[in-house]
Amino acid sequence: MLPELVNSVNASYELFSHLQTRSINSNQVPPRFAENKNFDENFQGMFINKPEYKKCIFRNSKFERPAGESSCFDTCHFYNCEFIDADFRYCDIENSWFISENKISIILNSNFSFGTLFNTHFVNTHIQGTPFREMVIDNCFFNDCIFDSFGFERSIIKNTIFENVDMSKIVFRFCDFDNVTFKNVVIHILDLAKNFGLVNELINNGEKIKIFYGKDNYLTLEDALSLLPNLLGYYWAEKDYYYVINILALEKRYDELQKILPEAFNYVAQTKDFSTLQDLCNLIVKLNILSSDHRKKIYQIINDRIKPNDFSNHQIRSFTYYLDNIKRILLENPNAYPTASITLHTDIAPDKIEDLAPLLKCIESNIHRLQPNLNPKIEISHHSPYEIVVYISEVLPVLLSVCQVFYYAFGGAKSLKDISSSRYEKTANSKKGIKKGKTKGNTKKDISLKFGKFEFHYSEECENHIENVEYLIS
Image (tube, rainbow, N blue to C red):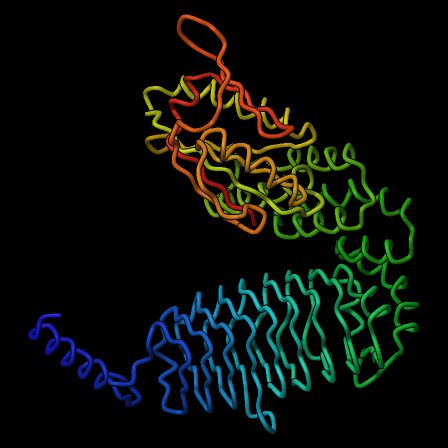
């Protein structure tokens, strides 16, 4: 950097510090990237900006009112730290610890929604007024924590332990529980019907469970479950169909459950409550009580009852987003398999859109030949040149085989890393090195490629239009 710019930057930092309500040392503005660093109470947590920290230790540090969206913390330790009014949406926190003595660590009125917590421990931490919404919480540990006035909502919670925690003052709502252990915990009775898998995990992986209700009253889990069916009338009258369906499933009253589904989906579709509609779809798919034909009928009900012509702009955006998710849940990927996206970059300009037809035919026919049961979703970009993105959902070995064939067919022979351990591959179209069998003809030629037991067919014009191929499995 030029000397005059350095002086200007230093002066600008001093002015910025002077304008702050609270005094800060401009020389201690947090780094954007840090590894193997130690930070103390002088760490200016309010000024972080999408940081990426690895193997760092924070002691008595304060993150107050920071713009911490999309922050990444890998193998970090937070000792006696405070997070106050902090925005940590879309964060990625892995292999980390939040720990303190005498509940000094506090997470207050902050937001960790839409983020990921993996292999992260919260010990002696006071969490209050901090939503955990639409998160993935995997292999985590909450021990001796204080929970107050917040909720886990529409989150996936798996391989996680809650131990010595009173959860009566928080809410679990529309969450999915899988292999979650509860030891010496208190949970509110009304949460039992609001989530998928919670009751089963409490029964199978619970020790010393106390169910809270009313004002300082407690039940055993067994007694609480015996009361749930008595709430059916209330939930039915209030049109809380998610809770009704969940309770009927817990009671194994499947005939009654299936009879109410059309009414439930009719009502929720007409109210334009698209998030609840998605929750209902998630629930019935996870309960595994409907055949493929029944799921198609449910999807048809949703399409018939919702008329987007009368929607406001924000309703149209919401409807488009949720309907795409609902279609994936009911029809395209009801088993929640991993999804692969195969992107084919072409040289086709908007005035040559007719050249897309052979490519689309090639994609569909080859996927059907490779895996007849796959139901691909194909999207075409509207910019120039066109891109074709193919989405398929299946078990990982099937996804890898299909991606590999597309990768080699249009990418040519190329040195690759071990494909079974890779989540992302990309290749340019070298058009050489693979043995191709071509049929005789004057102009357009058909190409047939063999990859072990798989065969891939396309016309030469398809190959000529593909610039490169990449895929992502998630």
